[in-house]
Image (cartoon, rainbow, N blue to C red; front, side, top):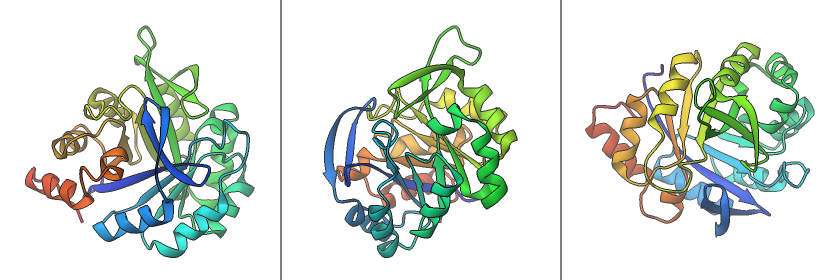
Length: 253
């Protein structure tokens, strides 16, 4: 959809620290979110995505002070998600420096929330975050989950994406739980399915392990690629990823 493809490091945050696991489990400490965000911005990250992965599970709001400190030191667009339940939450996050807001569990519980946020702040502010699992026998073969991937639903992922866009979602962040943290590559089938139904940008997430994994996700239909563990471990830099994408003829900043 978009001419220039974006590379987005993701900071999964719990208790004020960046964490990472495999398939959303066995989370381990990866560092300070402010330091890591600044590090990735210096590498040429197009955006930073900040997900408070335990906010919904713990039934609390996103850690606003961490968001604010990150925004004060990082001058690329910042998307924040986790624990967002109301338009008031969105207003508060924008007030501490978030550019875009991700919603997931609360939107599934109350779909009207999508329209409320889009009507007040504009669709461009709202990123629908989908934590998706394979589910043979369903319409698309995929369902969405809630509470940081811990709770499965019977809601078909593609049907939900389509409905959310109609309600006002301005972007889809599509994370494959099956691929998450495995470093086996993005779920290209899932990316293609989302591209077929989406009139808004699609961000592919989950599974990146090598520089060669990113270009295929763009070719499959993603407008942006998001990764966490390969960046946090130092295995790859944002520059490495962009160089590899350029080598495949993909336009990047």
